[in-house]
Image (cartoon, rainbow, N blue to C red; front, side, top):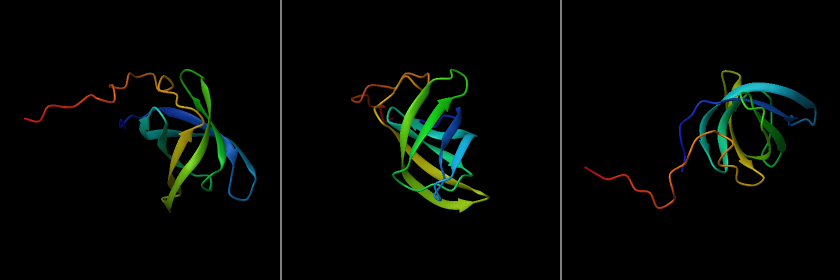
Length: 104
């Protein structure tokens, strides 16, 4: 399940040219147990490995970039996937998979 949630994170990795960038601070747009959608200034490409650090808890997870959108305003939307699911990383409880919202 995807949840719209703004969490400040630090991203560390290499840009598309292979140059290392350190601790770019950004916020999540959407999160789930498997990753997130974030904005990045750094020029990255799909299948790159990055490290994501939750700024408040300092917890760190290894990730892979799965989607890179068009640059707009100097930033691109970037989809990231944890190397292994980490539902507790965001500090929220996700509803169970079989949870349904009643339709009125």
